[in-house]
Length: 283
Ligand SMILES: [Zn+2]
Image (tube, rainbow, N blue to C red; front, side):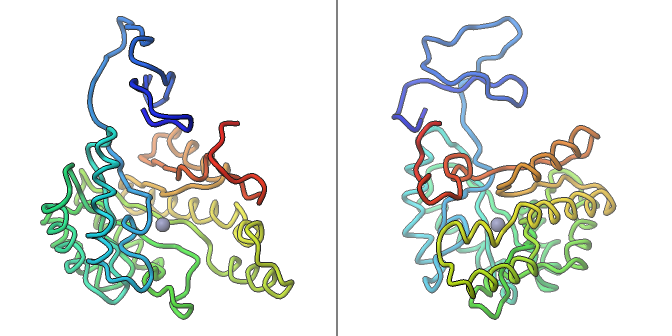
């Protein structure tokens, strides 16, 4: 177990979907109703940039992949046996170039199991879905992110609602094991707030958080859940949730029986937006 205070020989006890104990092996008790399993962890979507998202700005994807895959593998040896990687094709580029590069690098360097998430941000990507599915890519990320192409972040282009809706219909029609992933941010208010804070001369970390209020994320999580419900109800996976409002929406949908899941980033559990509150200390 890798913990904030060091590495211990031990594990995690899980009761249904909840972590109920973290500790060393000899302190684990066997209960008649529990299974003790030794096995691996599936990191369903690696969140360590730049590899997870396909390269740092300006660095070619393949080069970054080769540079980072070694670190990823070393991380995997700590217990993670399966990784999900983003293909991360820009809006006007095919998923296949990135998928092929990922498979090549994975076969050469990766010591653990690897699967890929496709990207759906354009008509081109929509058209690629059947062939991606045939090749084993069955989860697709949709980007409602707060970047507009004009500010140099074109790689993270926005998925419009028509494309997201048709992608959901495709995933629902295909059935298991299809998953629709959503990056949830409401772009226009974030641009407005960013501009306002910039004009005030704000350039600090807290300004970043102020420009991205929880409601701007929660609104898009609501959109994703409702859109999925009305597009054949495929499994919906909300990535990197950073606010309580988002957790409530996912929990509410699950309570009502909808196939909705959410994840967060380790950084969101260890940091707040306060400048003097940085660090992975246990609180
Ligand atoms: Zn994202």
